[in-house]
Image 1 (cartoon, rainbow, N blue to C red):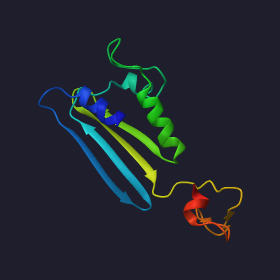
Image 2: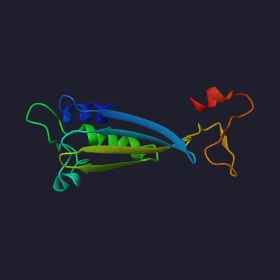
Image 3: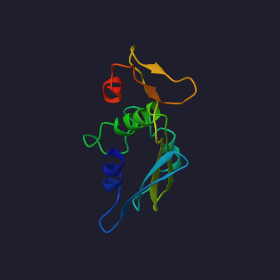
Image 4: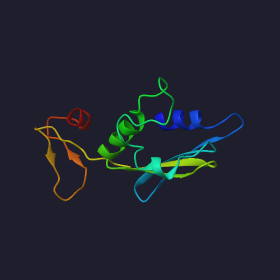
Length: 130
């Protein structure tokens, strides 16, 4: 949501914001592409830093991209940016289709599988995963 909001804010009237999604090789890809003002090279390295903002004072906290980066990273994904000043920006998020599973103490993990939860005999899959 933050990427979409930022793209809208960076795109002047008459511009376009595009959201594309897809899945391939066990990963989901989400792209947010705008025809906005773009991001200068010297700012790109700071984009995901907490409290860094390109917006005027009072219009942004500088936390949106930092939080987005943390969420994507915590789910085993990546977030990348490609931008051309004056031509627009594309953010690409890639996430695994199946994230890591954190089993409860009474559930057993199948050592031959990745991310598969095997509930104990007296629990349903829904109960074990919650």
